[in-house]
Amino acid sequence: MVIEGENVQEEGLVPEESVVAQSLRDAILERRLGPGSRLPEEQLVEIFSSSRGRIRRVLLALAREHIVVIQPGRGAFVASPDQEEAKDVLATRRMIEVGVLERPCQPLTEERLATLRQVLKEERQAHKTHDAARMIRWSGQFHLELARGLGNAVIAGIVSELILRTSLIIAIYERNNTTCCLKADHDLLLKSIEAHAWPEAARLMSRHLLEIEHNLDFSVSVKPGLSLKLALLG
Image (cartoon, rainbow, N blue to C red):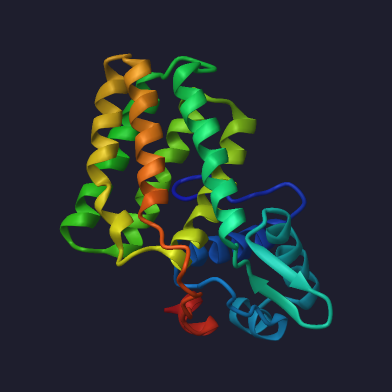
């Protein structure tokens, strides 16, 4: 997944299709398109001035990422993970993201550190202006940049998908926007990383992801999202 500043060309999709796929990912990541939202092909064709064939390829690509579900005879919908899937996704994130801090695949370059610092700066600004969409975007970006910097391309790809799936999970089960209050965790994580205090960084990451899970209420029902046009066109 690309959140900021990356080439949107993707394997299996032409550039125009990659742009559509990223627009849908962004709307899901920022919770403008909620779990269970219907994705009618005809509306997507109109919104993106595209063709049915291209829209179908985009939806199939997103289905492979587990953020869209295609139901025969009914069409495509934003995925709506149940409690068991939600816990599995978060457990997988802990295994991967804590593991990368315990055993980095590569050293974190100064360029990557500078990127992480810039992401935190953007995240702080989003909190200051109470911009929930950008809070979510930059929080996800922090985790993705960390996976890119310390992991490898495969790990970054997996973490990218898990970030989107986590966004869906939070959209369903979050208690009163509590996960937006975890900004300080990223500050502490970066300090430990800058000091090469890897065991402490791993401990903080585990605590951070567990806290996200503890802020979820698995007894709640799916919350409706915006209309498709409003979610994608504002």
